Image 1 (cartoon, rainbow, N blue to C red):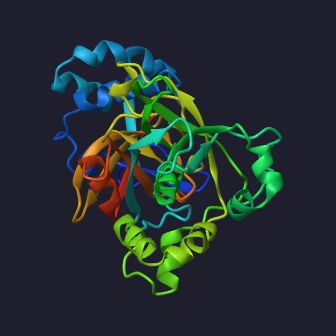
Image 2 (tube, rainbow, N blue to C red):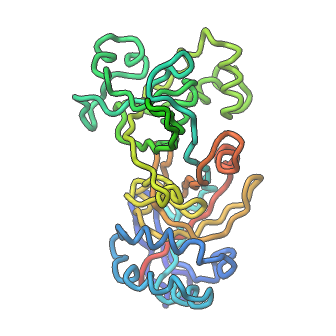
Image 3 (spheres, one colour):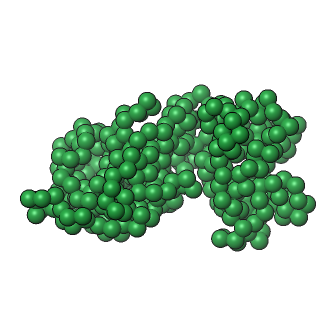
Length: 346
């Protein structure tokens, strides 16, 4: 695709795996200049711990701008970066999709009890990346799978659907009571999965016309009314995620878990992307209007996920909390059209 006619100052488009990046002027970014850039600066600084290819030079200047004025930060971004509209590989502009994810906070036990009977496992010995291990159903039913996981439980939850949510989100915070009676909060982070494809239990229920909307509220209500079919629903998703426990210091608790880039996520400013379309560490101007959010702001590509596939696709990290907290409510409701512009150093 050629540069816009009459503007020789713009560089050529760039092919980026699953996307085409088409250069644009800053004035073409909806809402540019109205964002509070200081809110993204810490996320950007954290991202520069593992800079994207070609971003090392601006990353060296970034920290000095942390105390800059809004005007100084905006001028620096415009001077050091060229914005590119992210499109399909053929240059077409899709509707795009913005969803949300969060870090659940759940009660847990170190040992199985009458209430806490659903295990979260660390990776078993013998798990090989890229090679399928036992499926979710086999883990629940085969003695050989259960023997391989003996002693590997990190913690125990009360609800198998909560365990599934934790696996889909990829990390969470657990309020646990230790053997000595002390209560503390720890983080469990994604460590591995069993090599099977992810299948949505919501989609499984929708296909059977068992529910009208694929929300966790609807899924939990269906499970409560159909306990005899709970395992059938859970086993429709053969993928199981394994976790590692991380100490959650007072400082760490101010940030989200580490994303695929390897840096802590920042609520409202970190997104998961398809890394075959947008490299980790890339600043992205995001614009989306819908029933849940109206956003035009700068975010950082710092994570990915099994369902995050395609050119104009992003999952916004909304923070952490329980069922009634804003982080969950926003993430659960967010599903709306999306436009994206990647920023590349000049």
